[in-house]
Image (cartoon, rainbow, N blue to C red; front, top):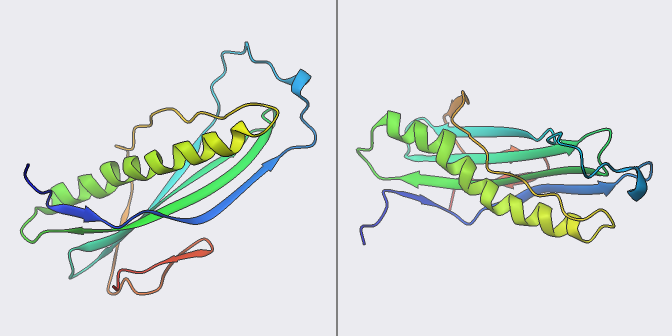
Length: 155
C-alpha cells in the first residue's frame, strides 16, 4: 500500500455543549414529519504561508425551535502534506476531505450523547463540503484558537 502524501493528527474536541430543552415534550414531537433538520456547519482553515501545514476546524450547530436539542461541537486537526503537492490539490483536500474526516468524528459523538435522552438520537446525514470555503493564509500557526480550545501546528 502506498503511503498518503497528507497526514493529520488525531482530531480533538475544541468545544462541546449539549442541552435538552425544557420546553419540548416527547408528546409534542412529530416523528412522521418529512421536514429535514437544519444542520449548520462552519469550517475554519488556517494554512501556513511557508510551511506545508494547516489547522482545520469544523463546527456543528443544531438549534431548531421545534427540536429538543441545542448542540454545538467543534473539532479540529492539524494537517501536513508533502512537498511538491499542487496548491489546487491541497485546497481541495483542506476544503472537502478534511471537513468530511472531522464530521466522521463528530457524527458518533452527537448520536451517542443525544441517544441518552428521552427523545432518541440525532443522526447527522452525509454532507457535501465541496462549496466555497475560504482558506486563510497565516504567517504563523502558533496559538491557533478556535472557540475555547486551542490547536497549534508546533510539535
